[in-house]
Each structure stands twice: as C-alpha cells, then as structure tokens.
Image 1 (tube, rainbow, N blue to C red):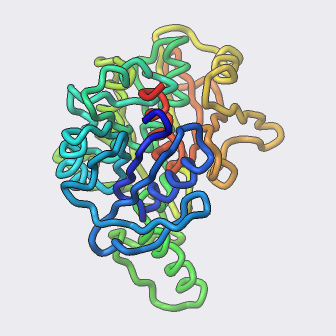
Image 2: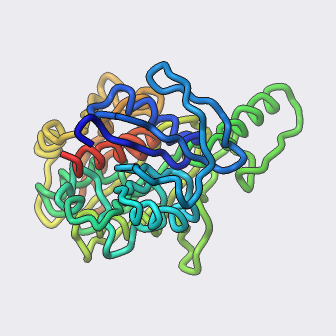
Amino acid sequence: MADGLNLAIAGATGAVGAELIKLLETGDLPVNSLKLLASAKSAGKELKFRGEPLIVEELKGDSFSGVDLAFFSAGAGTSREFAPTAVKQGAIVVDNSSAFRMDPDVPLVIPEINPDDARAHRGTIAVPNCTTIVALMALYPLHKAFHVNRVIAASYQAVSGAGAKAIAELTSQTEARLAGQPVKQSVFPHPIAFNVLPQVDIFLESGYTKEEEKFRNESRKIMHHPTFRASITCVRVPVYRSHSVALTAEFAEPVSVDHARDVLAKAPGIELVDDPGKSEYPMPITSSGKKECAVGRLRIDWALENGLAFWSCGDQLLKGAALNALQIAELVLR
C-alpha cells in the first residue's frame, strides 16, 4: 500500500461507477491499481482510466484478493452477497446501496456531518441515500445552530437516480411526445416525460414509500438525533440530473433568515445561492456537475413556530453518491 492503493469498483459500468472512475482520475487517493467489476453481462467491456484501457471483470467471490478498498454501487442484493466476502479478503468496503445503512454495526456517513462515525467501522461503511444527503447537507448546519425538531419536505428527484434505463426512457418519451407518437414505458409505472410521479420506490403499509422512510430513519442515525421527526413526499420529475428538496424545518431555538444565511455560508460543501430579487436560487441545471450542494429560497415559515423554509439542490450522482463515497475513503485512509 506504500506505493498506492489497490482499488475495486463493483458496479463499474453503472452511472455511479462511471462518476467514481472520473473522480479517482483527479482525486487525491494514490491509486496503484483499479479493478472494474460488474455482472457477467457487462464483463468484457472496455473502459478507460487515466487514458489506459481497463477490461471489466465479472464480479465473483474471489474478486477482492489483494484489494485494499472496494466501492460498491451495484445494488443492495449484490452488496449483501459480496461485501462481506470483500471484507474477509482484507478490503474496506464503501457501499452505496441500502443494504447496510440501518445496520447498527455499520457507520452511515456524510463526511461533512459525522466523520468520526467512519473511524469506528468494522470493514464496511455505508453511503446514505442521495435524497438524504442533499437534504442534510443543508439541514445539519442549521440543526447545529438552532436544533431541529421536525421537518416537512418534498423531493424533486431526477430520473438518473433510477439508472441509465430511466435516462433513456425520459429521452425516448420526450421525443415520442414531440413527434405525436405513442409513449412506451418500462422503468416507471407511468410516463415521466412532461409529468411528475409522486412515487419513488415501493409503497409501504404506512402509506409512505420506502424512499420516504429512508429519509427519516437515515437522518436520525446520521445526526444522532433519535427524536427527529420527518415527513417527506418523494417525487420523480422529468429532469436528467440533480435532486432538489423543499424543506420546512421547525427548530427548538428562534431562527432568523440572516443568521441562517450566515450559518450556511460558512458550512463545508455548501454553496449559498439566495438572491430572490435577481431570481438567483438553486436549480438542477446549475447544480449538475458540481461537488457542492446549493441552498437558497430561505424564508421564515408562516405555519410553524421557529420555522424556516428553504430549498436544497445537489447532484445526486456526485455528492449524493460517488463523491460522498470517495470522501469516506479519503477519510478512513488518512
């Protein structure tokens, strides 16, 4: 390891895997070797890393021999099957799936919020859900200043959060609509082009979706705030990239817009974009490709005591997934 790290990416051909490869090319981790892993269907594909071709290998039980750190971005089932094997073979696993997020023995980490949790890992560290990250990057600095009691929120989630097939479906449906042709769908239960779907993930007995439940449970764990109350409606919108979240938060302490702006302006990983008079506020089109989460539309909430309404926007493939994973790796390897 003295001359560099032997790394692996499980799910290398997916959207998050592609972002990880780009980040590793320009990041600070010293890379000795990079192993690209995927399903048998994707094995044999050629990808490039720092100008050199790399052949994607089939993910198997012995794929992690000699690997120092493995990034998993291939779904919860794959992580449950192969991550423990990777750890047994000596690798640290940074997992982007939902497989281990609520496991009490697995840290769930946003480095700007709870970096100390990562140092207590037992081989596996989980990356939170992308919507949770985009929301908490804005909420947590305000929580530290005013102590949040509860949040009512709505997310506006880009189709790329559902993978490459969802991106293609938005494109094909848009083209079909504009051409007056019939619209075909397979990824989402209804057409996504020129539409919004108030469903992300499956519905639970509570009436909430699994995505909405993740936001509440993950936020409690990350902020070490077991009494935190949250109600969110997660919505899929016809946007290619970057999630947005509208939040109304109720705090224990009095809050002012000026104080909140000052807190957010100093928060790591945050870009304050909040000049309504000039129509300046965060948008997916301006947040895509950026490492920071943007926050704006700050205003006192009229319905809650000590309430503040605000809008957060972030690239869910970067800070919401690949970048957060890379930051975790840098944190534990320092």
